[in-house]
Length: 265
Image (cartoon, rainbow, N blue to C red; front, top):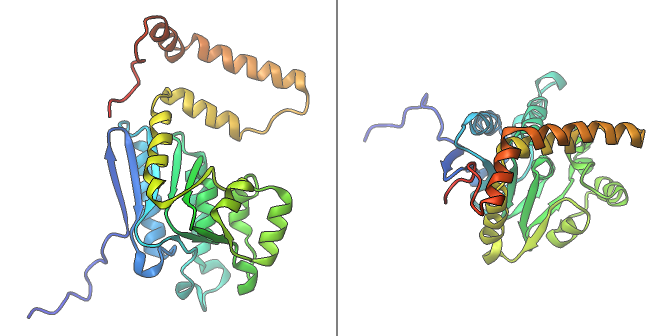
């Protein structure tokens, strides 16, 4: 028997599949609870960048194998490392890429999420979880601060819930996650794929440039003056009304047909 090659590259931990306008990125390290190991972080960022660059991909779905969506940082790799060598230093790029993706990102959460995994869920535009999924910000019980993930999590959570859950590190379920704004929907396990498909189908009906522009508008800091806010939004709105997608959309509506950007299933 030929011994395994000790220098062989480990198996791929993050897969990318683009079909019918949907780029599905799957975390596939179930034996490690889909923890954010160095390899998984590297591959996840690469797959995200490839999905964003793929002109045939209209929506990105972030999924996983196994019973855990993502357990956060791989603590086995972080023990004994100095502050400048911690893998957490790579996480901002991943979260920012998900958050600022010009294409909508849907998180399909079929299991537990902890710490950095919750940061990924929060960074997505839409998140659907099975009702048995659990969440927790476990950092303080490990002597850590949920600092990096707070950038994506805090804009989603009700302030009282953020204080409670960040400080207590208590586990909470998917219905509570929906109630405090972390996810959009909590569904039975046998309805998860149908719920994700419903969101994806709706997103695919939007014009790519309009979806990107809407995401940018949602992320932007609004002026303190209502008059200035209206002026900026009026200019933005007019540019899309006069733009090629806006004109095509209005023609399609009048002609009772699908706009040219709609991708067939």
